[in-house]
Image (cartoon, rainbow, N blue to C red):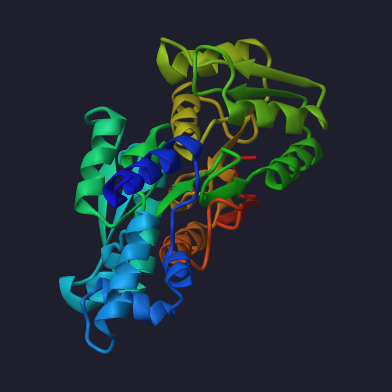
Amino acid sequence: MSRSRESAGARTDARTTGARRATIVDVATRAGVSRQTVTRAMNDMPGISPDTRERVLAAAEELNYRPSRFGRGLVSQGPPTLGLLVNELTNTFFPEIAAAVIRESARRGWNVVVAETENGAEAEAIATELVRRADALLGYSLPADADEIVPARMPLVRLDLQEADGAGVRFAEEAAMSGLAAHLERSGAARVAVLDSTQDGESRRAHEMREAVGRRIAAVDLVPASAGGIPAQVEAALEAGADTLMAWNDVHALQVLKTLRTRGLNVPDDVRVTGVDGLALGELVSPELTTIGVDLEAVAREAVDLVDGLFTGRLSAADGGAVRTVPYRLIIRESA
């Protein structure tokens, strides 16, 4: 079998079996040289013999190794570009995390291109276009087939990682949820309504809220999203006797506060309100929003470091070594 057919078979096997991406360390080991020698060979730099260069290039082809501009950019092509995919830029959470990623990337001299999935084309098409413009892909709600869209050598990192496999940053909400439930119990909450983001079924976050609060407070209701919008959802919760409204996220909670204000209800005297995300915007409203929040600077720092580690071979997604966890924290303010 020719080398080209062997390489094509190796690429197919890597896609269908879920094998980890080859790294510069793998190429160096296969060729019996140092990582610096691999870099020189792949970038046609002086200082190595023709035989060594050929051996490195052959090893790279066998392993389907393709260097991205994260390695080559400093040599000839300018700074690398990180593609960041977010859900919706009109949701304050995503501009805040995008700004954190941009700041962290700037410290390394990287550029960032941002795209959103909610108000454009299909997520797969957006991700595919972003891959063409960037050297690594980082983001939320990445398509299920993102591993097929992203070239074998391109770092792929997920935010709010849920799957067992792959590289990404997990958000640990459990401890903060439990802390919030304990705070509500101490404040005298007797009937809690969890306001979900979906009309059908129960979202993962709403389920975790119900579970955490249910261990402290007996009466916990799930109130699905309503075709009548947030005012109708709030109305349903109040009619059921809720004295505490747990919104799905901070933006949702701010809309709940507005609805309650138009009804002439005082927060937290008449009804308590909580959110999730810890947005800075929660400090700019009255009453200030009680919430659980994640340190977005820490998320950005961990995510960008994962991208760097995946390229250099310092980290591998295949053995679970490319997963970081950032915990949520309880932020007690005025609304509950």
